[in-house]
Amino acid sequence: MLAQKLGYLCLDTGSMYRALTLAALRNGIRPEDERGVVRLAGECELDIVPLAGETDGRQYTVLLDGVDVTWDLRSPEVDATVSLVSSYPDVRAEMVRRQRNVGRLGRVVMIGRDIGTVVMPDAALKLYITATPEERAHRRLLDRLRQGGEDDYEAILADVVRRDRIDSNREHSPLRPASDAKTIDTTGRTAEEVVNDILVRYLNYAAEELV
Image (cartoon, rainbow, N blue to C red; front, side):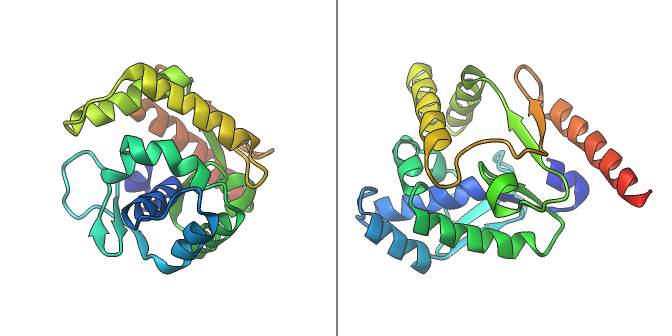
């Protein structure tokens, strides 16, 4: 929503790791096979492109080797293994390389757990957007129900907590706010409220840069 209001590209870097995880599962590569996953990371074609008239609630389209896999990325199978896949140093190095190539073009809203600290530490405006695990699990459940799937709230909540623990304690690119990031807690707030909050911060930042 923010990218659309600004006319910027929206790049959700987490979707890139999810797409790689999905590619590994579909190609019979076990997530525990670090060498196989790293090789796949360098071979597969991943693209995140703007909307082209889709009306199913997505904010962008993820293409894996030219095929739309946007909603497949949120499957329980991907949820269960994406943290392991994204923990491999060589996988992260390849994805960061791709992400920086996009970021250097400018006019991008980049989303991910290590953007301000690793991928784009010189980003113009850094935001650490968070919510309680319960809130995030509830949102994910609603997403899956909208897509006609079924799931259990407690199972989703346990997975959210598990992923936070893994991502916060991994050696490479751990989940943490950049020292100069602005924290925004979205618990109990609508997307519109959060986007308006960010727009105000962005406009204030832009005004300061002009002084």
